[in-house]
Length: 169
Image (tube, rainbow, N blue to C red; front, side):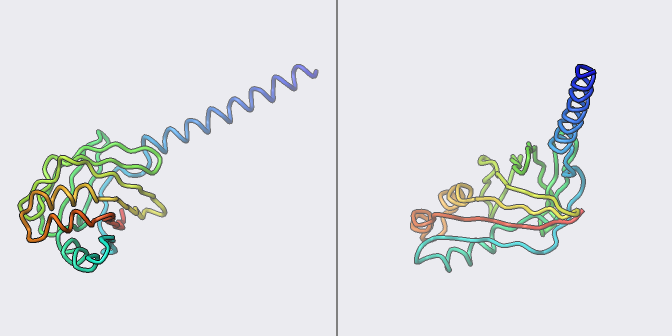
């Protein structure tokens, strides 16, 4: 009788473990990210550039904006639509709160910064997607290629540029 009880407990534990793993696999591979997400208008650019923070933040807030819509397809491709209506194709990978987006081309004031993928932390709660990315490397690339006045100085003092955005499905 003891062997039957132990066997029953082992079978139940295996079923629970298999079901839990299956649910975790579904969260990772089909986590609700798939579909069209529209900006709620809640976005921010946070900058740390020492004494130049306010100047750099003002410039970057106008240049670096979260897309109006993001479309994530099942095949790990997608499209971002910017404020002006331009659409940019991308590929992505995601795993438990981390999202890496590689744009085919991403122009900021005539400078293509697509060579550096964007890495986001993200969460989805009640059909609300929250994205945050440290875009310091993308901004430094932009500054080095832009020819903007004082871009070398700004790049040298720039320690953090973070962009945040919220979306609904």
